[in-house]
Length: 343
Image 1 (cartoon, helix red, strand yellow):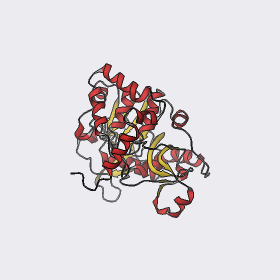
Image 2 (tube, one colour):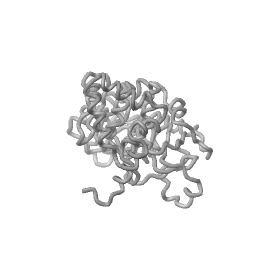
Image 3 (tube, one colour):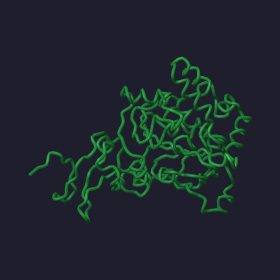
Image 4 (cartoon, rainbow, N blue to C red):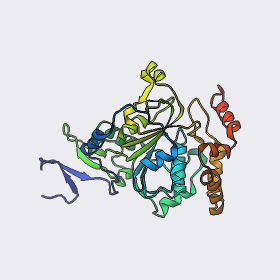
């Protein structure tokens, strides 16, 4: 007897069926073989990939792309790239909301997004909610498909492994699963129920790191979250780095290279490139500036002035830093990050 809730069949085996568990749209193609064809054609030559933020955003991020940002919440986000995307008026982008708070806030302020895989968004942790981010979802300006932080991370993991999905159990029986695009499936060994979480292969990602050579061999200190998988899942990868170091220094500590050069398309040296977010062992979050963002969002005219000052009237990331205290403020944040006692 046909089951009207069954949406998928395993190829070549009509006795095994899958049930569509989530009713929301899948924004990206999880086909691992299609992704493999793209990666197979990508050059693995170890060549100088240094460029500018403006050139990298213009070349590698196109309207309509699905974009993912590295870091986590207000930690190590690729702020210089995000600001440039707003300045270049990138539109109709998909976005991976894997604890994406200030990075999403920036892109929504620039009207860059129209769809989002949402895990943790809108709330800037204890600082409060972003009014413009909340409005974008409440009005339907951004279409959302829901995931937990874990399942969205596992979507990167599946892509990094060259798979089309991974099985999970953590969202079974929840409304998160209901509003996702996951599929229920039986375990082929036990027959028990799992949620099949589809691989996520972003068109392009941007990750800010502590150190890189000119080829894109990258080192990250502190928590990396899902960035090592994201780097392997993304079809195109932009790296901004606090410092470009010599390849000989990279080779002296090969175990520290967490993103290898052949994954990377562009490398840009941007000191304080994660500001105003935290950069582990380098500089602390500018909490005052994030609160200025939230306050400016309460009034459209004030937000326009704020964005003009901090994004549109800034030629580059250094201009943005200068507009917010320059090196004096950066040194304060550096001292704050490296205090042994923050009580």
